[in-house]
Length: 108
Image (cartoon, rainbow, N blue to C red; front, top):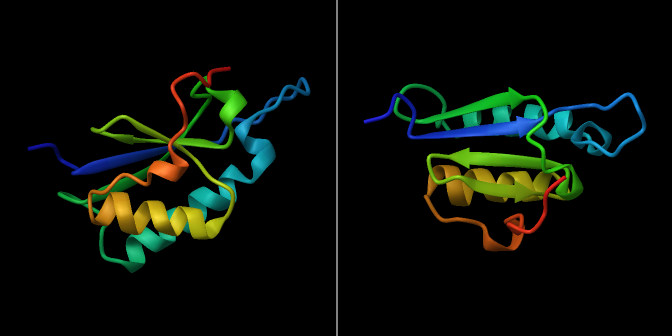
């Protein structure tokens, strides 16, 4: 068994050259909210969920983005209620939130 059941990485990259990036979409706020919600629900820690910061995940056109492993499910979201749905449905209950899945065709 893996140390964590699920690992969620949030792209927090902020580009200085004017190119679009996840940092332009309050990815830090989403990360902070997600981390707090995971802790609030008692999901954090060994055998549970780990929420981590990441640099550029190279899917900028879909930003903001996050990816859940081991399932390798990529998400994009609009607001905190979307983050809550990802936490409660996918991270807690194991059910992918299909409406928030980033299509494979979206790259940089």
